[in-house]
Amino acid sequence: MASFLLSRLLSALLVVVGVVCLVFLLIHLVPGDPVEIMLGESAQSADREALRVALGLDQPLLIQLGNYFESLVRFDLGSSLHSRRPIVDILAERLPATLELAAVSLLFALIIALPLGVMAATHRGGAADYGAMGFSLLGISIPNFWLGPILILVFSLWLGWTPVSGREGGASFILPAITLGTSLAAILARMVRSSLLEVLGEDYVRTARAKGLTERTVIWGHALRNAWLPVITLLGLQLGALLGGAVITETVFSWPGIGSLMVESIQQRDYPVVQACVLLISLAYVLVNTLTDLVYAWIDPRIRLGASNW
Amino acid sequence: MTTLLPPIVLLLWALAALLAPLLPLQPDQIDLQQILAGPAAEHWLGSDDLGRPIFDRLLMGARTSFSVAVGVVVISAAAGSLLGAFAAYAGGLIDLLLIRTIDIFLAFPGILLAIALAGVMGPGMDNVIIALSLVGWVGYARLARAQVLSLKHRDHVSAAIALGAGRVRVVLRHLLPLISSPLIVEATFGVAAMVIAEAGLSFLGLGVQPPEASWGSMIRDGARYMLVAPHMVLAPGIAVLLVVLAVNLLGDRLRDYLDSQLAVTTARKSW
Image 1 (cartoon, one colour):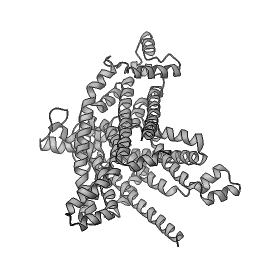
Image 2 (cartoon, chains in turn cyan, orange):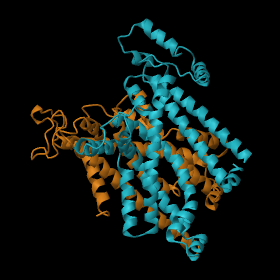
Image 3 (cartoon, chains in turn blue, cyan):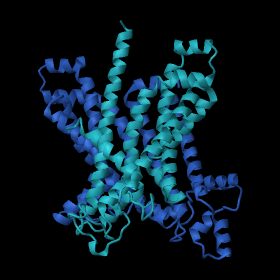
Image 4 (spheres, helix red, strand yellow):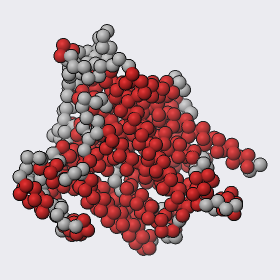
C-alpha cells in the first residue's frame, strides 16, 4: 500500500507541476502585447511599463515561471487588474458558492441516477428500461446553457415557483442544481445499469435469491454493493465535467461562484484572475481524482496489487 | 422513428451548412417593425431582438456549428491518433513524454481549458477551432496509444518488419487500419461534444462575433427576452438538441454495429 500511495502521489505532483506551467503559459497566448490588451490602446506608456513590471512580463520566460511557482507556494496569486484586490481574497469569497452548487448537483444526480439505473437493469429490455435509457440519452444530449433558460422560463417566469437567478435561500439552488446535475445523472444512470447487469449474473446473487431474500434486498443489499466500484471511478472523473459545466451554469443563473468569476474576468480582460480560476478548478479536480484513486485502492485490494508494477 | 431520425436530422444539418450561403437568406437584415415578433407566415420562426428572421439565422448557425464541429474533430482525431499511435509504437521516452502530457491535459476538467484558451486568444471561429482542437486531441491520442500497445507485438507486425517495412509504414499501414473502429466511434461522439462546446463558447460570447450567427449566441441573446419572445431561445436550443441527439444515437448504433462485427470476426477465428 505504501508504494502505491507514493507512486500515486508522485504522479499527481507531476501533473500539478504541468498544470501550473500550462496555466502560466496562458497569458503568453494573448495575441500581440497582453499589457496593451489589458489596459486598452489609450493607456500611457508609463502605465504600460508599470504593469509590465508588476506582472513580471519584462523578464525572461524561465525567470517568470520561477517567480510564478515561488509566489504560488506563498499562496500569492497577485491582484486583480480590475478591482485591484488580492486574487486570493476574491477566490475565497467565490469558492463557497461553487462548492455548494457542485455538492447539491452531485446529490441531485445520485438521487436520480440510482433508482433509474436500478430500474433499467432489473427490467432489462422492458418499457422501464427503454424509458430510463431514453431519458438518459436526452440528459446527455441537452446542453446546460439551454436547459437553464428553459427551466427559468417554465418554473420562474410562468409558474413563479423559484427565483430567476442569484443565490439566496434554499429555493435558489433548485434550478442551477438540476441544470448542472442532469447530464451527470444521465451518465451515472447508464453506468449503474451496465455495472448492475454485470453482477446480476454472478453466483452470489443467485445464492442470495436461493436463500429466499426479497428481490429488494438482493438488488440493493447484495448486487449494488459490488456494482458500486466502477460507478465511484466514473463519479470522480465526471466531477471534472461538473466543475467545467459550472462555468456555464453559473453564468446562466448569475451564481456568484468561481465559474462566473472566470467569465466576468475574461470579459474584463483581467487575465491574472482567469489564470487563477483555471488553476483553482484544475487543482481541485486533480486532488479529487487522486483521493478517489486512493480510496478505491483502500476499498478494493485488487487495485493495489495490479498497480504496483506500473 | 428512432431509426430514421438521426440520418434525416444530420442530412438537414449538413445541407443547411453547405447550402446556406447559396440560399436567398437575409440573416443580417434588421427590420425594426419585426422586433421580437413571434412566428408568422412570412417569418415562420419569428424574429429576434433586432427584427432579424430567426429561421435564416438558424441556417447560418448550422453552418457555424457544422464547420467548427467537423473541423475540430478532423484536426484533433488526425493529430491525436497519429501522436498516440507513433508514441506507443516507439515506446520508451517518447511514450512516457506523451502519457505525461496527456495526464496534464486531462487534469483540466471538461470545457474549462477551452473556455480559458478561447477567452485569452480572443473570439472568432478560427480561435474556437484552435482552442477546441488543443483540448480535443488528447482523447484520441489516449485511445490510439492503448490500442497500439495491445497490438504492436502481433505476428503480422513482426512479419511486416521482417519484410523490411519501416516505422512509418508499420504504423500507417499495419496498425492504424486495425484500430480505426474505436477511433471512428470516438470521433462520432466527438462531433456531438463539439457541437455543444461550440454553442457553449458562443453562449459565453467567446465564439463567432456578431453579426455572424451561432446557435449558442442566439440562445444567449434570446435569454434576455425570454418572457416576451420565448421563440428566440426555443428555436436554436431545439436545433442543438436535435443534432446532438442524432449524433449520439448514431454513435450508439455505430458502436453496437462495430462491436458485433468484431464479435463475428473473433468468433470465426476461434473455429
